[in-house]
Image 1 (cartoon, protein in one colour):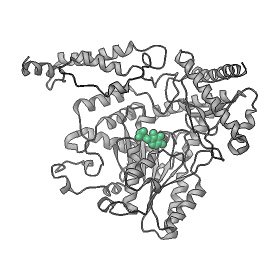
Image 2 (image 1 turned 90 degrees about the vertical axis):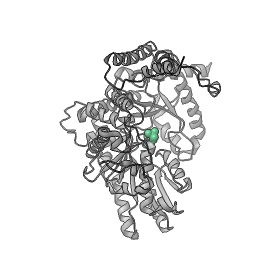
Image 3 (image 1 turned 30 degrees about the horizontal axis):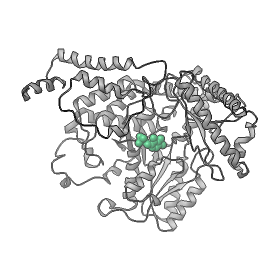
Image 4 (image 1 turned 90 degrees about the horizontal axis):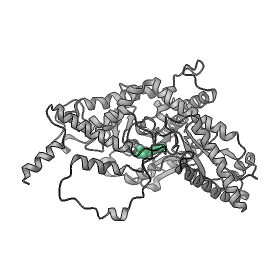
Length: 548
Ligand SMILES: *Cc1c(COP(=O)(O)O)cnc(C)c1O
């Protein structure tokens, strides 16, 4: 074959640059075939086909093929790679903060991939860049920022959003670190249930993980305000400069909500009192919690969407903290967590767009770009190329759901969580660890038949005398987890997950917990009841095998 022959095949593998409806049909048909093949992997189980453990050792020796394959052959191969994937939308999976994705958001990703806009510059992305501005506006308005003053950019994940927050704060506290490097005096604050990306960020930014000050949390998983104040004062007195206070609204494992309003007031007081020559930056890591903003102006009395009283209480409880998001200097938002888009769709919002100027490079550093156009975020983003997929997926879902839809879907998963908790509380063998929590994650433990579950939670948490009991019951709950998930593998029950350290006891021992994370709109009451039934069944099975 000459290269011209091969080129013919290659051209067929691209969408056609000029109208060719027959080829369009081929394109759509190719996707249909992929979907058909995926469909054959669906069973009643919440994963595709069977779970295959990849041979990572052999994979290291994969080589590039010598010859071309057809679109059909490649499609078939690609489909084989999603075998075993969890179906996150399945009502029988309640494992993690990974959501199912909507059809419009998938179309957004497809369109943005098809024409490959680059958000660095509107010259390369046209109206897709406008979508970024529109999503920024909608979200700013949702959380209460003034859209005229606010700005935002999509970045490489929730981690990226916090990175931007800390970097802007670092420039404020230690001006010109962009040019001169990081001073040794910078410190960053976060709670001990905040996301570990804070450690990564301080490490990568050169602030140093040793300069990340981790503040303990209350039993509600909120940053301890007294300890925070104490440590902030100490830092200032010691001549440190506060690059950033990361305030978490919706912790990953337990939906803890830090008291942002109090922390902003505390920051302002300290600035006044110590006559600081900069304003310590407050970044709200709301990558999970942001979506609850849709309830800020919900009429909880009238309750037009007809949620149950317990649900209303949980929604109102979350809003009590979420409604203050606009007080933060910057906010991280993951549409790929509680916005039901594919990865990656993460937006960092800044209350005052001039904060982004702190990150701006001079045009001389980028001589071949940005000579004209109206929108040039590439002048201050960390990334050079940025995909249009995140903004189009986010825009798709914001338009699809509107306030109404987001309220309904979040309200529903909160309602299912509340029903789960009601059922867990209805049995003496189970106890909820994050009882008063407002999110959709429930952490709970099961105990053997002879244990008084009314007392044990507090005893094991507070009293070192109960260390052995705690450790024994940690193992017990791991067994329960194994049982429940192996049943789920057989199509009986629901996949849940577990955490090795829900939090530490007062005497420093990790508490293992069972975890249900509800994020699928398909979950219904019978699915949450099944969780409880299976845990109780596990309790009996394990009890029997222990006495055998
Ligand atoms: C998931 C998560 C992150 C990290 O976000 P990615 O999108 O996974 O990078 C940061 N903070 C919190 C609270 C999270 O739950």
